[in-house]
Each structure stands twice: as structure tokens, then as C-alpha cells.
Length: 153
Image (cartoon, rainbow, N blue to C red; front, side, top):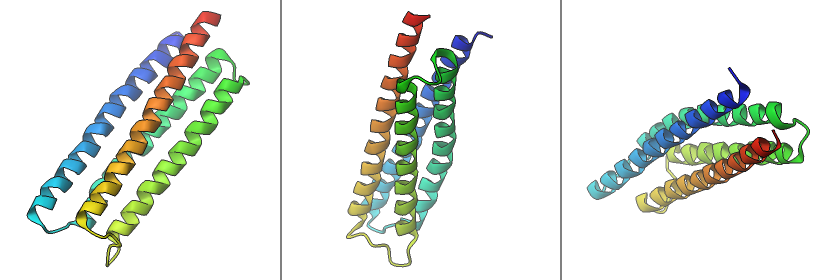
């Protein structure tokens, strides 16, 4: 199988995973809104649900890394563009996972340190927005490198 085909399939799989991840986070957010209507916060269950998101997120980040590795193999492992993408991706991934871990830790605390259920919901929303921003930037960078590599091929 040609490496550009492998790359295209890996990118397609990554996009599918992004959609699945978005759906899973949206389900957590919708559930949190429903819980908010009942008036009894479920901080611990929220952490459990976000822990499931984390598992899928780790798998997705592994796929992102595979895309960068394949881009490096195809185009030029020493290119500054690949180095920048790899560095930015790694930093973003670490920050997002740390942010999610810290959020889950606080949700699991015996006395969760949130002003209200709504403030916990806002933090989940902010995490979702940060993840979406990362995904958009990652996709844009990969598409730009793929287009550049195809022109040079």
C-alpha cells in the first residue's frame, strides 16, 4: 500500500474519531444539563464519564502522533514544519490531558471545589472548547503539510 494511501486512511480514521469524541463529550454535557434540571449535582459520576472520554482521547492522540510520523516519513523527517507540528501537538495533548485529569480530580474530591453545578458545567464546556480548538489547529496543520508534500512530490 502506498504511504500516501496509508496517510489518507489514518487521517480519515482520525477525523472519524474526532466526531466520536465530540459526540461523547456532547453526551456528557447534555447529561450535566439534565442533572442541573434536577437540582442534585453528581460530581463523581461526571468524573467517571469524563474518565471514559479520557480513554478515547488518549487513543485519538496516538492516532494524531501516527499521522505526524507518517507525514515525517513521506515528506522530510527533518523539516521544520514537521518539528513544529510535533512539538505543538505534543504540548497541546499534554495540556489537555492534564486539564482533564485535574478537572476529574476536583470532581472526585470529597467536597468538590466548585461554586455550583453550573460552574462545573462551565469548566467542562471550557475543556470541550479547548479540545475543539486543538483539533481544528491540528487538522489545519496536517492538511497544509499534506498539500505542500503533494506539490513537492
